Length: 297
Image (cartoon, rainbow, N blue to C red; front, side):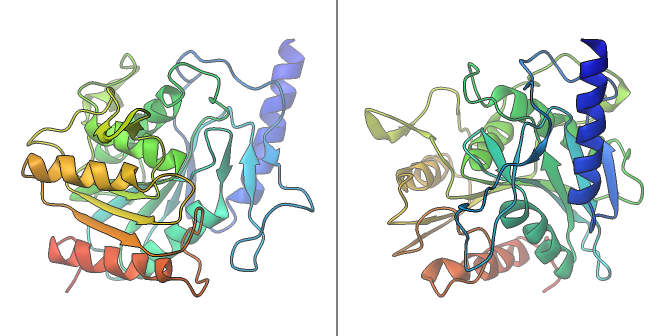
């Protein structure tokens, strides 16, 4: 059994080296094993087959069976704005849309002076209860790593979190958490794990099934909640109420946020240009961040 476990780790390392080709640095999130969960028995790999749905005419890396969480660091080449963002790709808590909602978004942030940290969080957790807990633990640890200065050359003044779909659910839980969802493991966890802002793009499952005007019980907004930017398509199979209700609740508590619901665009568009209204979300997000003073005007 021990040999099998070592074999899985080796395959994970090989897969990680392929996925990290453009990253400046790759670090493990946890010094040893992550908090208790039920890890996959299969090795980490791209699960996309020949019939995998492309987005904007390009294939998507659907990274599955992630048991070794990592941060993939993308530093801006110039004009560092002292802003960092932890990026949580989506994938229904089953896989990670690694390039579409991860590395491609990181490269865009690089271009506008933001340090991007793509989080390879644990999946699958779809059968766990709650399914967001292990991913949120990974987010919280990643934010503490950034704030504790454990990532070489990364000393931001502010740290945000961005998530797509299930990653948006994860980002929302991390942004609104009232506590750390794991016991501290070392001095790194002495640093805050609460983000300064959140960007939620077509976030999934934020509202109650029987009342979409109310957030789920595990999401509690108050006047100290971080500001959020939300983007969603009206024709998304994941109800746009997740974004609308989050925005409305933030507004009720005086948290200045920004909401954009586009007529069309569907689900899972990432940051790719597809000739749809949703192509505009990145520019709108950049303008919002500039209005907050987090980017150069």
